[in-house]
Image (tube, rainbow, N blue to C red; front, top):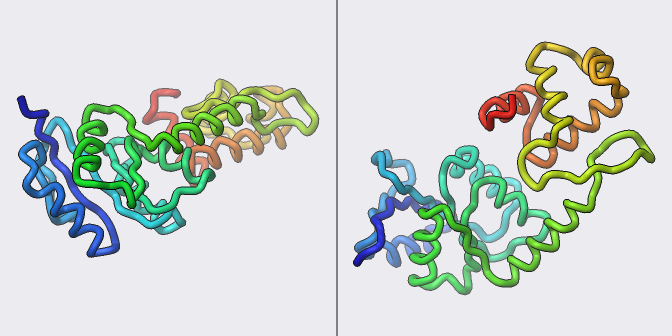
Length: 219
C-alpha cells in the first residue's frame, strides 16, 4: 500500500542542487511535485517544502522563515553545515526534518518528506545529541531580569507566564513605565523580559510580539 501522496515544493539558490532534488522526487508515486517554487500550490492535506542551503546565514534564515510561514508550512532542510547557534532557530522556524547534504540520497529525502508530512521530526543522530544538549542548557539558564536576582527556567518554545503578562499589557496600550507599575517590576526588568522574548522567538518589535501572542492563543 502506497504512503499518502504529499505535495512538495523545492527551494534553493543553487540550480544544480535544486535540479538534483527535483530529479529524485519527480517520479515518486507518493509525491505530487510542484517544480516551480512560485507556482500556486493546490489545497491538499499534506504539503512539504524542501529547502536546500549550504549553511544557515542571515539570508538563508530569512528565506527559511518565509518558506515556513511562521510554522504553518512543514519544511525539510537539506544543509551542508549547521552550527549549534542555528540548530534551535531552524526548529523554531518550522523545520521538521534535517538532512546533511552529503547523506541526502533519494530514499532518505523521500523518507524525510513523508515524516515531515506526518508532523514527525527527523534528525541525523549527531544533531539529536546536540539538540538535547542545547535543550538542557536552556532549561538551566535564567530569563533576563534584575541583576543578581534569582533565575527562572526559560521555555524552549513559546512564552513564559511573565512574558505573557508583559505582552498582554502592551496589547492594552501600556508603555514600559505603566507596565512596570502594573506588574511591580522595574522598567529595566520589563525591557529585559521583552528583549529575551524577542531574541528567543526572532520577533522584530513589540507589535510583532503582540501578533505572535495573539496567533498562538496566549492573549
